[in-house]
Image 1 (spheres, rainbow over the protein chains, first blue to last red):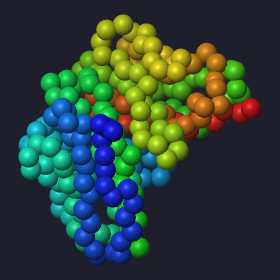
Image 2: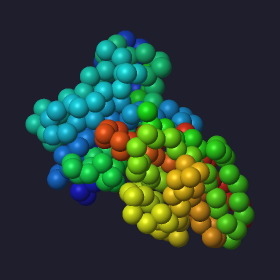
Image 3: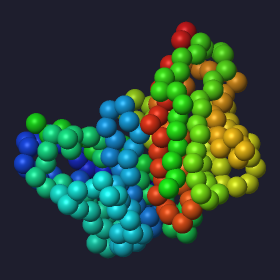
Image 4: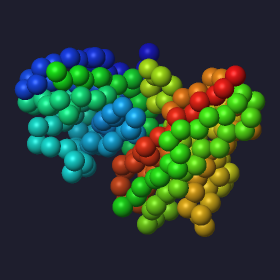
Length: 115
Length: 113
């Protein structure tokens, strides 16, 4: 399977714990995106990378959230000191660099439940 | 800033009847516009995209959308609904110096037998 893969698919944690999600994009895609989706809402942009550079980050993203893409391949999204409001589906997507009209290819998401 | 507004949160149609899902956009630049579909427990899938070529865009599964600059609209249509079309549909805008893709709040399509 050469699509976008995310791990874990489901994570249940207690408030205050740290969690980390991993995304493996399609191999030739230079751009990688993170979105958050809550029930009944559209995906909300969090951040994106071109290669290893984080080019834009949402102002809604608190300091407890950090994302990395150290070698321009896979990416991690860490949430520190989780809160119940962080419960959501975290989506990763990738696309070809050089095109802002290109298709985003999405993974199936990582669902976070904070108790 | 760019944004999209999906005018209906829920749409119900009978199988075999036309589908219309409405989307208005706001952009200071010539936008790129997309429709994505999300089936329950499945990932988001591209239906079609507009990127300043033909204003009438054809997508997968018989869907199409028309870009109307004068109305700032990009409505999604299908002549005849099928039960398998039941899903959540998202209108998306991109472009204008940013590589962000901004999603609407979604329209849930229900297809009645």
